[in-house]
Image (tube, rainbow, N blue to C red; front, side, top):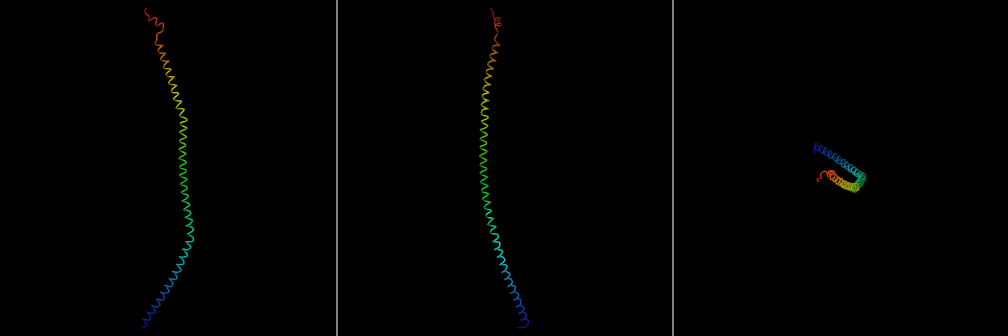
Length: 145
């Protein structure tokens, strides 16, 4: 082989050696990176799992509290509905208690007034009849005989 061939062969061997060293370094760097990623995953798993468990418990408690609040709101709505109905019934009974006798009293008063008015009209009619009759002197003067 010629010197140039040996030189090129040496250059190729040196380049292959450098490439092999770079590949070995890349493999070790990859292994270290994999270990660090694994440690990070373990650390995240250890720190995040309790947080996720707490968040899950918190969300289930919040859902339970919301369900209880909805039930309480329904109960309050029902109680207030019954309260309003009872107040309406009580007010209607009180109004009937007050206005019922008042209506009856007004009807009695109207009846009494009608009776009094009829007595007055009868007395007026009687007065008019007596006022239109001629007196005894007037009757004698009208007598022809």
